[in-house]
Length: 305
Image (cartoon, rainbow, N blue to C red; front, side, top):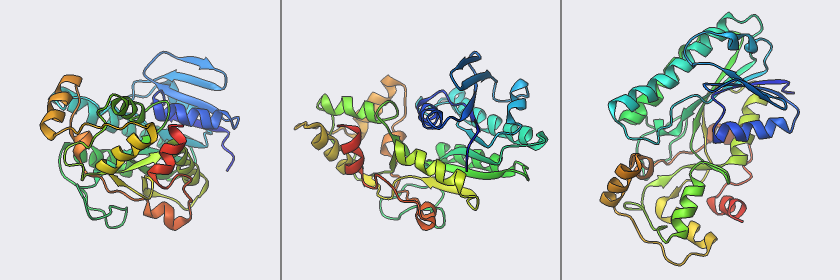
């Protein structure tokens, strides 16, 4: 499927830039809906929107091939009541208004990929969580995911195919968690976190982009998809590989209470580190997608060299 026009809602972060770089190279016209000021850079136009009300941005949906919605306040913050309300509303409001705008469009986007999260699954150190038999978890982050997906599923867009992206931790050179983990490891703090038994679900940024292309081009894809590499790994082994690839001999471990104190001072939550996510991309594998970096060792070999 030739993508002539791509809409990115909330595309100014790490993942949005990766998508822009991929499709800019293909000559695609890209429109980014942003809460910042409007501007134009080469074939990328940035249009202001507030993520909750109609505006001039709705006109750009006409004739678009693809809409990818990445909008949402970062979960890398303290879960106080104000932040929790913004985390939910930023996701739900943007998804709702996009659905309403698509419904009103005469020539709406052919496919709508809506960001979601692999955090929707419950804590697991044994059972693999896939789209068919995965257990939906409990707690604030899970409730966010459920409301997010519910709003997306309720959107009435008969001319537009819908895919929910349950995204795991995306590993890239220029953003996301890897640069932070690299700094910690080089500083000698690359030991296990908590028990180290919790699983980390992850995906190389190139496989993330390949997954999106697969979902766009295969017209039979719809519903929720896990965007994760097929081999989740324990935190302990994750950190062992980090030290190996960076040639660091010492990796001091961090107990749960140490992480709690550290999270308080840097303004985040330990759940992002301590929750065990054993998520696998069964639907993508069943449909024939081949991962370029199926193991973390392969991914780190590429990203850290």
